[in-house]
Image 1 (cartoon, rainbow, N blue to C red):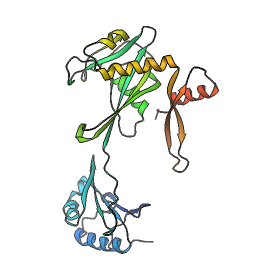
Image 2 (image 1 turned 135 degrees about the horizontal axis):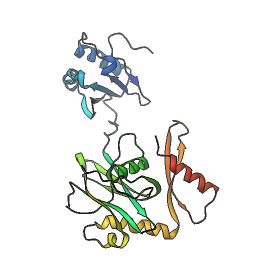
Image 3 (image 1 turned 135 degrees about the vertical axis):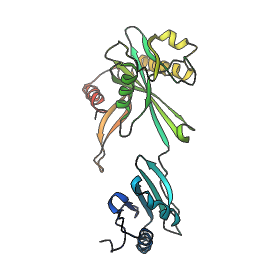
Image 4 (image 1 turned 120 degrees about the horizontal axis):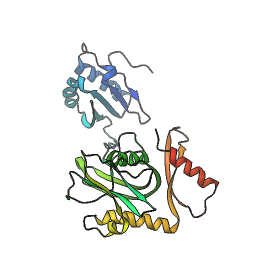
Length: 281
């Protein structure tokens, strides 16, 4: 059904919500408060529920009128602010929260022949001269393994490939008062000559397993990651990943699951191939 004249055109979602984007609807000659009032009346008659306004930074003069008409800030990204108003008066306000969890990765890079692990000391570490795994935050639309490989290379110059997921740490009260998920994965090095990022990393080196597991400047949690990895090796276990596609949305995703690697089969080889390609753009 067409939108009546004098009413904002928006995208209808499956929850009967409407999203209006200022990039498509902004008109400097409009009487915005009046058009907003007509639009709200129309959406209420149509029994729409959540009304979302995605307002570009250059159209920020919309914001005062929106807040005056009951819209609340929901989230902001580079260049825009999203506001929302819940229209039903006799229905639970069932709005999704703003994204609330940061994702980080750590790369446990192991030289198996020399029994050494790649470690770094951050230039701005909370504990000076402490040793940790190279890693950092996942970038938007970046997959876990892709992020781990990128971070290790940026910080140390070491090229790697995925071996296995090791551990997940979940905590709260992080950056911007968000929760934090930290994924630690084992990566196999392709080279061994370290070229550290001098802006972020004060020191980087290959450290023997025994030294790492007993070093006073290595946090117990980081020691735990290496112990878990060595246990996986003894037990013949690997947390592999495999490409898959959502049967309805047709979107590709990566599926992580535990698998025994003691006896390799043709299926194992297929999983290995997916592992190499899954997190590449």
